[in-house]
Length: 251
Image 1 (spheres, rainbow, N blue to C red):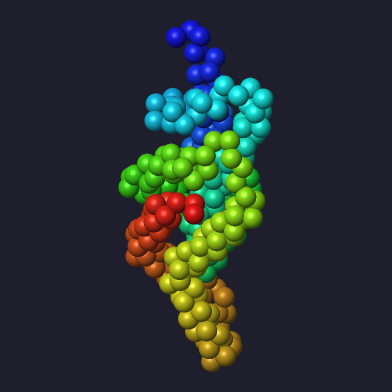
Image 2 (tube, helix red, strand yellow; image 1 turned 120 degrees about the vertical axis):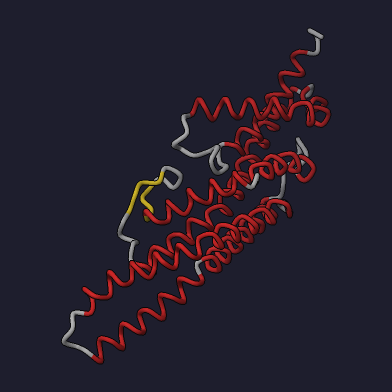
């Protein structure tokens, strides 16, 4: 048992390289607002939980000391790439929230977002937080763990994935996230067009009236009313689309 300990420790390190790198970029777990020590402990716990399942595919490669450095770098790269793909897909709800904020006139109300490293509209942050709670309640984080396990079948340890294939998957993920964001914010885009067209007609029909002072409060009132009606459908549609993407894998 003591003789096999170095190989087991090396195999655990190889597993930790991919799982830890991917976990550092996942929504919720990899947020900058979460202390680094907590994220490290979660990554170690996740690696320990998956060790028994993935150990047979990793331990044979741990004995090759000549390839160890290359394997670790490759595993870190794969973990970062997969975590980035999941994060890009999750940003669809943030983009949808930004579009909603723009259409109802709350785009200037900004708050610092640690996940983006900059400022984001307050309403978009609220919708993103609601999406996180909704996703966790539906158990989508289990799909993230399942994606970690399936990644070892798609990208076995010791193999370098093609950069062209990863680029194509990244482009497809960005396109899917953008399409999803536009579809989630679709009712608000239609509302913004209708409201602004009606505002333009009102300004031409009654030029003496200060339309801006009437339109801005009305825009907020109608926009927030529409959001209260459509938010549940937005979160459900996002969770379903995100779950389907995770189940489809990274192919």
